[in-house]
Length: 238
Image (cartoon, rainbow, N blue to C red; front, side, top):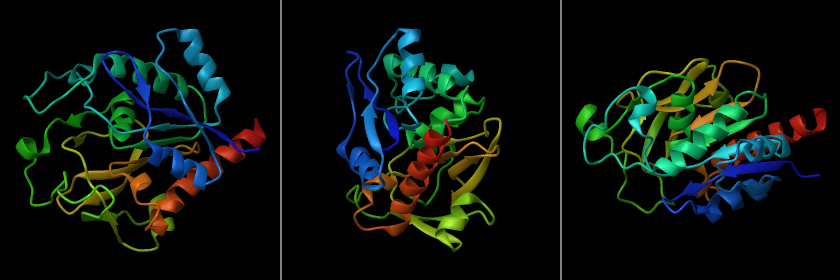
């Protein structure tokens, strides 16, 4: 029986939900059953989503309203969607009440961090200017820059080295860490690129997009395989 992976996808101002095929392919390739969780304002429905799924993937997209971490919008580069914020925070707060595995990607790492009380750099080019290109010009299926992997972290056990090549499509990043999170990787300019949960529950979050690299990169496949395996183990023990 494949573990059911709830995908909290993109939502627009019309409350339409969608998910990119790359997330679906990555989960399927690792043995999971991907399931898009559509927008709902019904708390009982969201609770049922959480009970149904064995694990959850929070994906990339627009920026998080800085009101969620007690700041005002910095500049015109910050693009938000109230409907998506409302839904994502309802879901992640419900998921965090459980011990079910979480994989958070791009916006997902930022969402997780804010949900746990952390803050964000709203715009890297103006608040933390750097020679590292965090919004790459290359194809989304190509590598962009290196990240430095923290020794002893879960990511270090997978990578087997100190550095990892990633792609990059973000202008925001973690500023202060949320409660219970530790850093797994940073870029050369010190921007946090990956975190994990300090508790025993499986919680991994990446600023880059490993789902776009699974056809060419063994490490990206291992990140999804690790997550789906944790979901499978959780489903068997439930």
